[in-house]
Length: 90
Image (cartoon, rainbow, N blue to C red; front, side, top):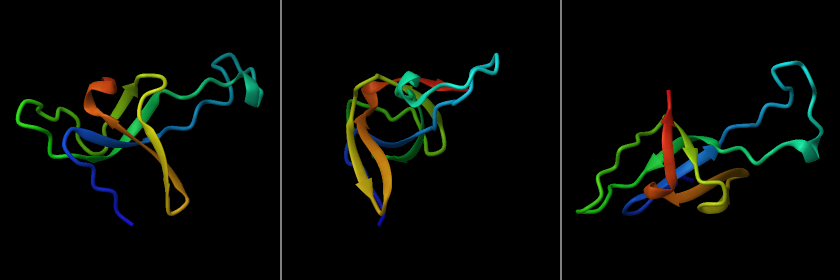
């Protein structure tokens, strides 16, 4: 199944959080934070007053609890408004 977002919505897939810190400490499941870095999977056409500034494949930072989580064909995605995307990670 294909997800096609409407208006100024964006479909993202969260990037897995690191399980080991840079110093080599392995984090327990409860110590991990919800990841805020995601990859853009699909972008809506925008609105007349909103220009879409992200594109498919971009890595983005999102607001911590934004969007609606959905499960399609066993994969988890988040659908959110473009205004909930804080930055593009380069």
